[in-house]
Image (tube, rainbow, N blue to C red; front, side):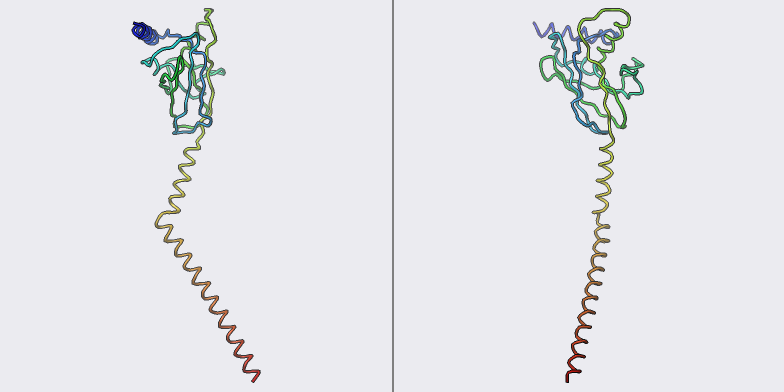
Length: 202
């Protein structure tokens, strides 16, 4: 019975979201990946306040988004509420606690936010009093380190390719030949000096 009630609540929240009126008590939002890079997933953790706990459902795919910073205002709120950027699908990992990940392909400055916080901010600007504090947008920098590392790996692979190994082997052989020739010349000169000294002594 309890599960049925929760599912009904989740369905109502989903319907409200489609209508653009969903406001969940998102108390905190955090990017837990220390150094996000392009092409690699970064992790996001979201927590509800007020003791709310919802099961895994469709709403989790639409609550959190990440957009480039140039599409937000000075405080990180999206300039266009119809632009959802990259979604961050969530999964429940504890009571009122959810985790998700996203991937972006371009380096730069980004903002992660919960749409419930966006809606709460909008109604507050309209003079409506809302209870509790909602999670503010989170800014993050996505670096291109992953791409640089890939380029370095490619160059390294080229240096250790069969063609490169043949070239390095040829250079090593040439050095060995030159060293051998120099050693042979030095020994020959030494033998001549010894022979000349012996002849003089006689």
